[in-house]
Length: 391
Length: 161
Ligand SMILES: Cc1ncc(COP(=O)(O)O)c(C=O)c1O
Image (cartoon, rainbow over all chains, first blue to last red; front, side, top):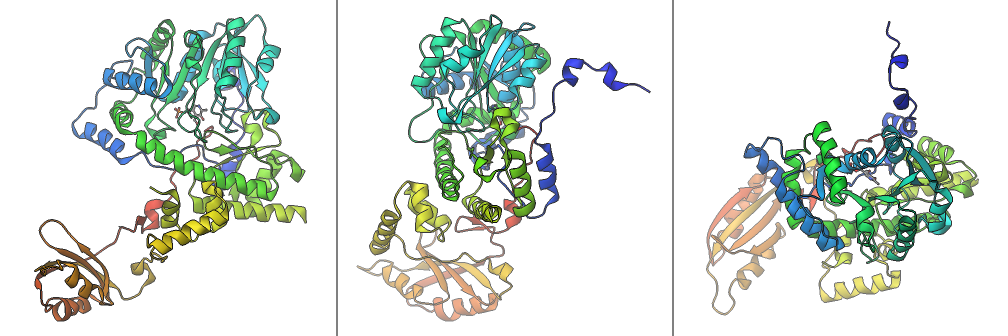
């Protein structure tokens, strides 16, 4: 008998599995579950974008693309990025098309981190940063952002965690799960620290098109001279409702992108070809789709924030992505207890805050990537749940 | 497009409070805006979109193309006006292209519709010809997909989304 545990890489075995499986297993057992737990758009990819993917298949375009992605896609991307965020990237040397933002994050860690290099990871945040940093040989150092700062990252919080080994700062905004957004002034303050301590920044801007209240997203690369220290990760998943197509990209300084391209070339070859054809169409003619989806998310966001505040679960107003992160401490329950009771008693699924880092305790993540009808019913059930708790 | 109209078109049962929250207005503002739309004839009613095939009622509908002779001075208005008086008629449109009026008709059976066309529509003064197309299945109506199977949430929970 082979003792597999003994034979595998201990560095991989050490990485803890995601803690949220349990709830999904419960939810899958139930018939009438109302879920507010899913982290992807409920919209289907716009039809004209899907059509271009279909057309490419009909035309038999089923081959690899160049490692970096089709040059037409990179050209469009360069134009689009500049138009939206006022930063210019050379399509031939500074852009790489990846298998989702996920691959881009992985490439960035593996390219920048030497063994023992420390990566600052603000939490609560998307679950992949610390595990991927560890697997790349780095050492994740957690920064706990605070509700009273609206979950924004402050320069002090960075400085408290600096050591001589600190190399890279992850900047996960607009944030999943809190919905927090860093405004220009916040970014400028972070930029000063970054420069002073000679850090690099992985700016995960995957939700950049989903910000509300009329203030558009500011890319960290557009702040002062941060472009030369920043690897921007972005993609098509959230902006164009294209999660299943698996397409993202990285924009950054030539030397870094060139090494990332080498890794990508050996490990992946190229991002999906069909998806790239669809993405060209999305960039060329997709602005109205983004606007429409954003406006729908915004109405749902207002509805759900108002709903939670009415119920007495304080909920700071999220300014980006499609999540709210209400505080549930007033119930006297832990996040996990809250989610478990809620799903058993009312058949509503939300995700416990600690799934996104220990400092998420006392909060739950609620996605509003659902129809208004669905959200209204879920809010009704949650209100009933709180009523029962108080009795 | 006006967001308020968009929301109401999708779901006329949202309360003024809900609409107000979503649009960042007060309930009173929403109420008066709706009243204004009703007064101006922009909002012309609130009805329920029923999938009659599912309701198991006797139900048939058809789209009828009419070619008609327009009247001097009145154009197509006069004949349209006559046609829309019939209870069976759900909608009347003046069309560009190969025919003039498109009339959607509902009745209890296809035979009733055939009779309606033969006895009521075809004999009208200015009607030159009719072509009746029975509707066999409605997939989407009034912006709504009628078979909920087509709308099921197929998103799967990925472990660490
Ligand atoms: C903050 C954040 N970054 C990156 C991703 C990865 O997205 P993708 O790999 O689909 O581009 C996600 C997905 O949920 C996310 O929430």
